[in-house]
Image (cartoon, rainbow, N blue to C red):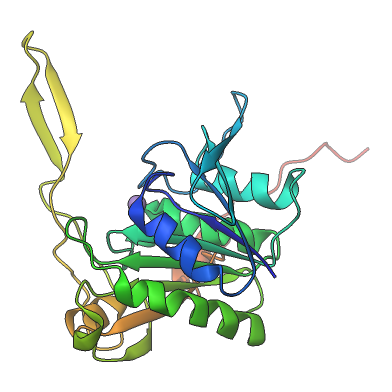
Length: 260
Ligand code: MN
């Protein structure tokens, strides 16, 4: 089995090396990861500059490269480039939650979705902390999710988004299938002045967790449970919009060429 490991925290992130090592038990592991921090770059790909793949030493038995591209670029290089196509892509282990609408911004989740776009199974794994991250449970879980997904494939560009609470394995209260909650962010635009008196802006603030009902990924994490959410790229809403009938009914009469 060939496993491609990537992330958005960059090639030197601890979670990347740990998951690559843990997946060695399942097959050949190749790492392609951004050379620098790419968190929250979403699903961007690089079209206007050349991409490089530079070999990196991440320890024995792990073929590893850093790139000057995004997480989605890493997956494109790993699946469509001149390297052998992987059987599965694992993105992570991210330092920081990817819950609710964070999946839209997440480079971690986007990398897994990019794999799914190329019909390669994808898994995103995150631990819900930026500092003092406890990777143990996620490291132990990753190979099991890989084996389970390969044995129980998902269709239609769907990935498994795994979030692990930042507690020791003994404190984890199980796992559950969830839906995305909502994490609205407050006070997000901070305005300050630079030393020359010119204003600059920095996005900051924390989530308020607007939907943390039972069944959401956010609720599971609050209960110290691992959440698994199936995420796919079909953003089509199933809502019926009455406005469409009004819009269609109010269409101006067709104006075409005058009949001959
Ligand atoms: Mn990240």
